[in-house]
Length: 346
Ligand SMILES: Nc1nc2c(ncn2[C@@H]2O[C@H](COP(=O)(O)OP(=O)(O)OP(=O)(O)O)[C@@H](O)[C@H]2O)c(=O)[nH]1
Ligand SMILES: [Mg+2]
Image (cartoon, rainbow, N blue to C red):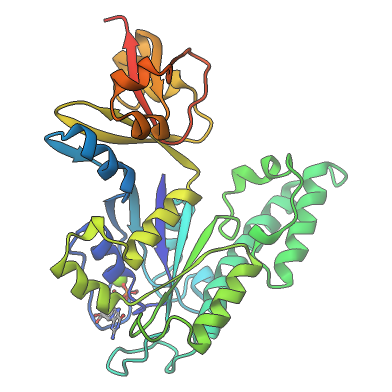
């Protein structure tokens, strides 16, 4: 599961990537600084790990992680190969959530490829490039389709008209089963998106004119907008324990995690408390595989305590005495935050 950072050149994508993943990708004041994508991982901040720590006091805490990709800047005409060519599209295609970086900060010393600050225009440039690429993908499929009366042909025709109106496919009113028809096309504008407004100062600019408009545009797509100042975040990072405080970056990572449709379970012990992430609706049996394949092979059952019960009773023993520990079989589903101990045959 990956999140890809996209946007015009010089909007702060690599700066964000470095902050999120503790990397040192090249980030300079010239457009197209990033050519090949940068790959990294980031811890997902979760307060529950620190709440659990109060009762267990382990040697270490291991948070769960998500993958982040910093993708080359897009410009007008990118879909047909202008700028750095259209290789970037395959990098976007392989992501599950898009983080769309929008420059609100005005700093004139940072070159803007369009020559002026206009976040609405900038968002529309990126949207249009992705829409044109999706349109091309759909048109190719439509040309190949011989049976013009089948369900998928009719659906794709509708989606194509929708794109031609300048709308991202994520806004299309799909019926529940319809997304299956187009899954293999790996369309770009159907992916969940988070808009990030990179402002000069997040204390002053949170409700500025442009931020309000971008938020409204996001709401129409049911997409969240996060406002942050990478300049300020970079300074904060130097001062504080980054993953424990409620920064804009942490909000962003949590939001990305939500959109990836993942859920969390915890394992606890004297040595470590660890968070694990699994797709929503995975069973206890499937969950065991993320720890070790041996657990899945010899799976007997999982001892489960819901997070709230553990916090209420303060230990596994006390929760068990209160009847709050239960055994989950192979096909049982888990709740987000469950504390799990797997029983298995060695
Ligand atoms: N004033 C100000 N400058 C910023 C901010 N965020 C990034 N920058 C500067 O903008 C320049 C470009 O930042 P990058 O993170 O490299 O931009 P990018 O989007 O990765 O650019 P490309 O790789 O060229 O597409 C750098 O000089 C950053 O220091 C910000 O919030 N405020
Ligand atoms: Mg870059």
